[in-house]
Length: 146
Image (cartoon, helix red, strand yellow):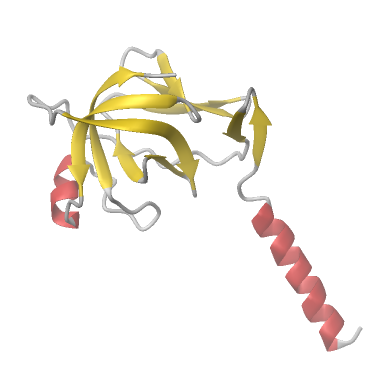
């Protein structure tokens, strides 16, 4: 086998492996992540005693393994979790109830923006992260969903 053919075959193999990292399908008019990897899910270290009161409205999306609204990486309240069932990524509240899914239009209370790494580290042990960068939104409460 000549060198050009070997290089071409290696390129095809790498391309195939990388294209399988994130799979999305259309389901009920929503683009749904069907990959098996778990989304990055930073949480606040503890339940806060005071909340920021700005509002963020937009679609909950999964972009490169990061849950975002309007390009903000969401820092979820203490006790929240993420679940993927049948390719649908769901956010579970601290009572164990699913409250939203990727693709839902949401309205979140909280705040954030262009926080320096030192400040975001005060809110979440998982941040800052090379996997998912800011800007950040510290979720105070879920005002509306889906």
